[in-house]
Image (cartoon, rainbow, N blue to C red):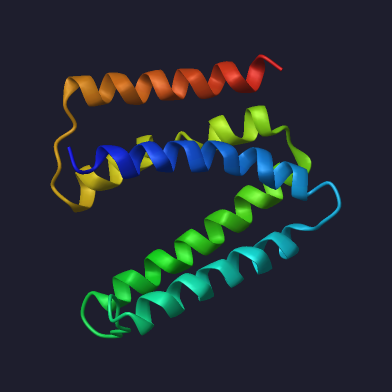
Length: 136
């Protein structure tokens, strides 16, 4: 259960991100939000490097880390662009459907099984996305 507290924080932080971003986008552009996010990442990266908790390795799985960073950055940009023109109450829940895609990728590339329960969960997520988008 060591995953529970950080996962709960992720849920709270990601949920609040839609609201704080929407407030910021009242007078800023998505590019400004990326700048603030980047400064935050630079600070955290500096602390991790200075404390010896991380090193920059551009070989082996370091390339997967670089790919993950590119996906995180581009995904955040897409979220900010969507929030700039859409309602947070729709954009954030719809964007939270990403675990369905992760489940399919995990089955294809990590040999993880899609059980009946997981498949049913994906269908519920898709149903929820449909309801959210047509309910407005």
